[in-house]
Length: 305
Ligand SMILES: Nc1ncnc2c1ncn2[C@@H]1O[C@H](COP(=O)(O)OP(=O)(O)OP(=O)(O)O)[C@@H](O)[C@H]1O
Ligand SMILES: O=P(O)(O)OC[C@H]1O[C@H](OP(=O)(O)OP(=O)(O)O)[C@H](O)[C@@H]1O
Ligand SMILES: [Mg+2]
Image (cartoon, rainbow, N blue to C red):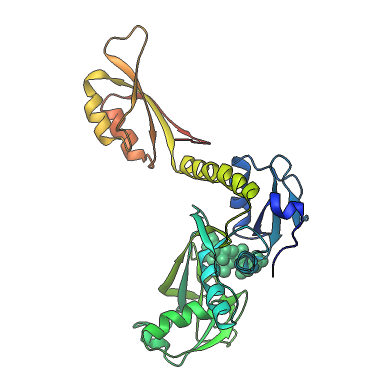
């Protein structure tokens, strides 16, 4: 399927995002920080970005890989788990599976794991031989278990997979886990992880029209800048000059700190540094022990290297 060739399809970058779910808030926040203003509410399934030639299509996450692979949209944001599963399904169905990975995103982290009832014994994946396993991801599960020569019977559920063992539908499940709270609430325990996933920005496997490429070229550095900023902190402190080497040695990312004179002080300076790593309380306490004072750790909103 290809999009009707009208002006908008040539000049406005069309991006599919999850309408409502685990990826939605982070995606909308990322776009907002990139200066992509989506004013319409989530009820607008096709939202025009006011300040940039971008259209946002709000859909079920399962549909996003197909929309990109069928060239209905230019970009899509989806979990790698859904992307891989859909790709395997589409290969079986003889449908196109081409796409380009534009960039990995720093949210939507989760893992696809096998879980069994708390009280059941577990010796390894071989225990699953001949079992009924409830899952939304039969292809990913089959890929993993086939590698080990294990046969199983998939029970397909698109949600509430965790209820399957108690409902007598399956012996085990294979579902997404983040904190493990859902498993625990349903009397299950995680016994093996078969796939680790993050959100990813994918694009169609064709060159974009030049107008759209220009928008992509503008947005990509912004996306990278916002993600880099999210991981980074601006650290400021006053410190004794005599201790600067020791302070730099324990400060994450302190290769080139700015050292600023403090008015009226001869043996103390201000030190400012951007750190791409976390600054733990323990390090702050060590800095204080080395004579640092007024230690401030400030979030960074945007970064452009
Ligand atoms: N607990 C979680 N924490 C973080 N990311 C998660 C979590 N669960 C799922 N994800 C990621 O977010 C994606 C969307 O999850 P969600 O549960 O919203 O999907 P869904 O119920 O299939 O939504 P939809 O209605 O769009 O089909 C998953 O495919 C996965 O990549
Ligand atoms: O390990 P946890 O932190 O508990 O997260 C895992 C749960 O999150 C996801 O479902 P979600 O809550 O998004 O609901 P859904 O089943 O409607 O997709 C996933 O399918 C698990 O059920
Ligand atoms: Mg879904």
